Amino acid sequence: MALTTQQKTQVLSKVRIHEKDTGSSEAQIALFTKEIESLAKHLKKHQKDNSSRLGLLKMVAKRRRLLDYLKREDPKRHASLVKKLDLGK
Image 1 (cartoon, rainbow, N blue to C red):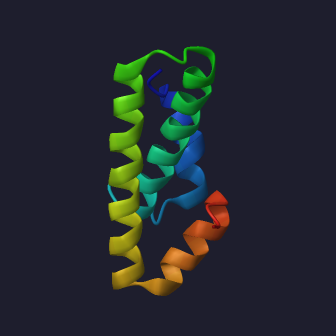
Image 2: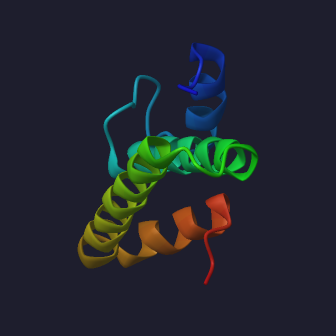
């Protein structure tokens, strides 16, 4: 269920700040979003997989904290990221 290198590269190409960006808040949020989508798809098929469910909840919480941080530090970057990743409420 982990993302392949090709999937990571594809996701990061949309949000990276510079060529070798993998650690910015935007990059981390984008990777978490892709992993969350993958894990949610897995859980629809395997409903009783509680360890994966726990991992999903942890990822969602971590993404939420990163989004809150980005919104607090730079609201413009937060707004553009939410629009790019289609995370609207």
